[in-house]
Length: 113
Length: 112
Image (cartoon, rainbow over all chains, first blue to last red; front, top):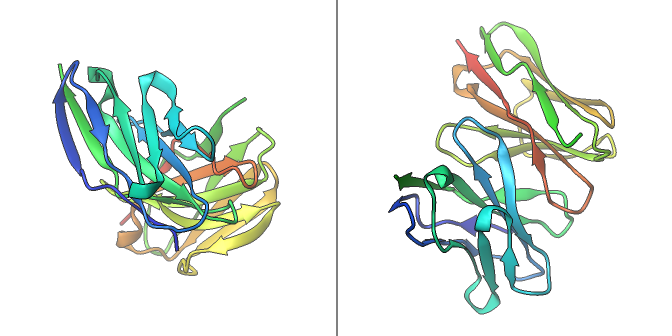
């Protein structure tokens, strides 16, 4: 069964620092990958997704992620974080049937002003 | 309308109570989901409905009973819950096969 793992559980950065959150998937077939964000007290929102094509995917709010098949990775990046990026970030993978999304353990990001 | 609306936002119930959580969307999505999220944990899938039919049940105890009366509504009926069932219950919807889930804000359930 498909799964994703996020190795960074907590990340603390200062504003303007660069961000990279790790996500590794373990599934040998076609992979469809997502990053979701959950701001404090708010619902989960889609940041970006990868289905096929250009492995560098750009999302909302200046986030991007790169699908690297050889490394089974889909890391999330942002060149310069803001205090408002403080949130929990979840990587997720879609099953082949396209009806089941499985989340990684999440990374809690705190950006200090 | 790009919202998934969940009611109630907060629910406190005793272990002998019967209550229901409701979810509604008007985006034309034909796949709807219930997830359970404990504090500081990722959402865990409970049920998936595709075209109003239950397609996935992730071995959820029978004290949780889902219902999809029509393509816009999803209910979760609760009966004889345990304190460990206290969590945030998230509803989500999507077009079948896309995986881009739209989530509601959740119903925070406390079982006493």
